[in-house]
Amino acid sequence: MNAPRQGLFASIVAISFALHTALIVEGSVHQLASTRDAQGQLLIRQLAEDATLSVARQDTVSLALLANRYSERADVVSLRILAADGHVLATGGSAPSRSGQLFQQILLQDRTQSGQVELTLAEASLGEIIRLQWLPLLLSFFIHVLLWLFYRVVARPKLSWSLSDQTNTNTADEADSTTHEPNTPAVPEPSLQLKTQTAPAANAAPVSYPVILRVAFDDPKSLLETLTPSIAQKYFSLCQKLLEEAIRVLGAAMPNDGEPTELSIVSPFGMEGALVGVNQNSAPALGHLLLLAQLINLLSDAVYRRNRLEKRFALHTRTAITEADDTSDSKTKSNLLIQQAKTNDVLIHASNSNLSRLIIQFSLSAMELAQESKDNTAVNEAMRLNGLRNEQAQLIERVRAQILGKPTE
Image (cartoon, rainbow, N blue to C red; front, side):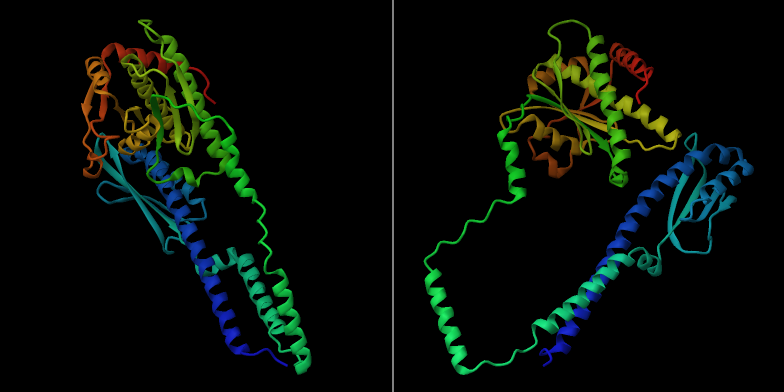
């Protein structure tokens, strides 16, 4: 005998397969669009840097070679380099008539617009996405076919028993249920995930520092997420080495006018940046961290400029220094304050007594906070470092030159 309501179940299976197919295709479209946007932003910035000088000189030969080099990428369907008056200086691309996502950037020479670059990256068609995701689609199709076959076997009606057989079976089931009813349910065995989560509880509690320096990447486009793990780890290792050198060289160069500041790397560089802790919450210790934060920003800026020239990934940094108080610990405050920081910013939130001493030694100014942040005591009354005094700037420049004079990779 056939399974009941086969038509209804077949419709459900067909709808399920259609939904799975739509989700797979839509997920691929979203992933490809995100990757294309990140790649387009990087390519247009690189193209702008490479073309600025040639556009200013109206060097069409160099621009044509540059356009051909970028057009070697199969996803670059159209490329144009324009002068300031809109005149086309060079074009390129594998399929200029094909539609895609357009990226544009203005070229500036001595703060004056000297031209513009336009880059169009191809959008994957439905056929290309299906060819890309043929294996998941095929697996989904086979799974739904198996569900259909499984239903036909399981739901097929069996031959009816005699009334006496049914009665005996029901009686046996009731007796078996009555016998096992008092038993307590078995305790489920702990899962592996639960063991993993409870393992850190056996370790010692992390040290809480009264003062924290948080270094974060300035990454509004989330470009870090587009890197492969090996490239990201290599970049983090470079930043970590620069941080360690900055702490060591600056500590040796600081004037010996009292108790030296003891710095500890609480969290090495990763996706969220790095944390440096200090056990002293004195004004000299905070002043040491202000110099270190400025030095880190200058080092990251130098690495950014060099890596960009070599067409390699790099990001600027932003820093925040926080002192624990009665309402919040320094680490939590630093996480809130860093969200207010901009590129190359050095922000600080400390007690009034320490700030009164630091204002005498450093050029600090009050921050302009957003309305939603003014009620947050963890970031309210924070200060921004506007610059360094002459002797401080000379010290940082000597340390910076000493660090960059050594190999950092």
